[in-house]
Length: 378
Image (tube, rainbow, N blue to C red):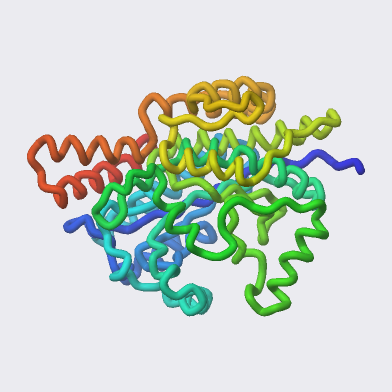
């Protein structure tokens, strides 16, 4: 079967947290008028999330990573200003250092009321934020073919994004504790494989026809064919505190999809490995971020993440060049040099403790760092 080349357009969604400007704790209830003003100024690109302390933005359909960066910079800058005008601050991190999930309030929308009823205790703990990258692949069977292969690289994406080391005032020892929380939900984790679009759709229809879900938007795998757009949607990543990190990851995802299509065009493909092996790399990325190692299944040994990233950048060089994101792909190396948000959060906490701050004040210093970095370089 022949396929038309995919458009490889790009779209990015980011979820943020709202913190009180004085206490630096999460707000339990969004300030009156904040969402209305945000919707006026960012029409169609901002929406409430499951909890009132959360807010989501999305770019339009972008032709290049550079265009996506410009849109996200505008969205972050505008939303941070609006939040400040309402006495709150915006942070891009997948967890808050010390907030108590039990005090948070749901957004008053029918979809979220239904989710709360269905998910019960595991839903009430969803005080987490993520980042999703969409890449346009219009033909359905091609989308499923690339979907099956792209899953191999999900741990590589996650490692670069980690921003959730703290949970309710404790360092949990993981760089992405968000995944631990999210994995308690149904229909999460690594995706299964499907032989065709028809097989995928029949599987989803079983749940729809049984009345369990109304559509594919309630399938929350780390990677999925989007239920709303003709895209592959990577969902494994923490939200990045620095916009430059978001952009580097977006370049990586877009280049990976092009590379897999290029292989297919040449009658090649990425080798399949069992999910339990990829799951091991997923755990290692969640635990260690960019300072650990992942299994190179071809070599059958652990390889430092920095070396794996360099190999990936070399493999994807022609794809990034064709897509106009070579510089952004190379910038992923800087994430290793300066650490992910999780690394910098720990550094800020430890430095505050060395300056004789108690644990609560040290955690507040982490929030101050997140506020500054969320709008850095915009």
